[in-house]
Image (cartoon, rainbow, N blue to C red; front, side, top):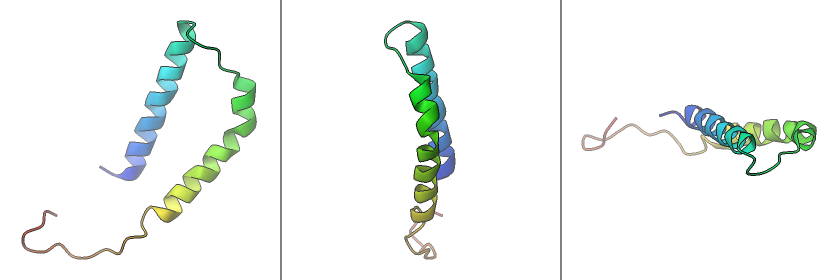
Length: 66
């Protein structure tokens, strides 16, 4: 599984849980605050994408899975 797919899937699950909890009245989400700081999520995503592939690629040996 690609890390990008994992990240997107996790974000969708978290967003769905927040929406469901909000509908059930478990907590209040101030969407004005979320809208104000959403660029921070883009910055964090960019940092993640830059630093995720810092390990060197090496060919798989005969006993290692591809």
